[in-house]
Length: 192
Image 1 (cartoon, rainbow, N blue to C red):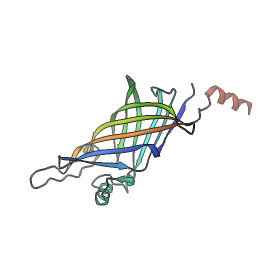
Image 2 (image 1 turned 90 degrees about the horizontal axis):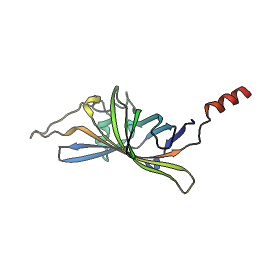
Image 3 (image 1 turned 30 degrees about the vertical axis):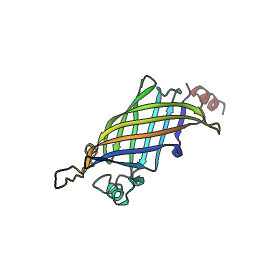
Image 4 (image 1 turned 45 degrees about the horizontal axis):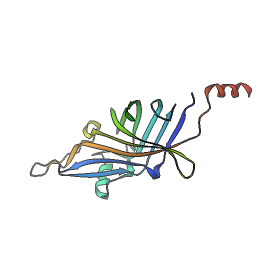
């Protein structure tokens, strides 16, 4: 069966993370530069054969330049040494009309298995004739498991930044042209 390639539509996608500050409010951060390629054998994505997501660590934006610089430092992402974080999907399980996607998340030099709950928004054709698929992905990680070890406690004993990080992504993919079937490819190669 021919595989279909789907590429990210960055203008209609967002990658966010949320961390508790002083355990009383939540700070939201974004990665402004990211990429996602998906290959699947069908349009319901259960037979996804490749899911590769990357984010440029230097594009981190928490709406505070001083905090962003700190996040890029060796206390957190160490962006000079590790400029990219990566998620490679390994398994897609259908749950009703939605999914659980499990894969390997690499931050710095640490790789851990992570599962994301993925809500499938559907597939539509936009006004320009492009076929698009929409998803909302959510999950949680513990930052210290990825060597993001910085910690501080106030004089009153309040933790400054939580260990738990919530991930929230709004993803829109654009369907690419169908790949040639293996039989067609071998016939063309034989004819050449």
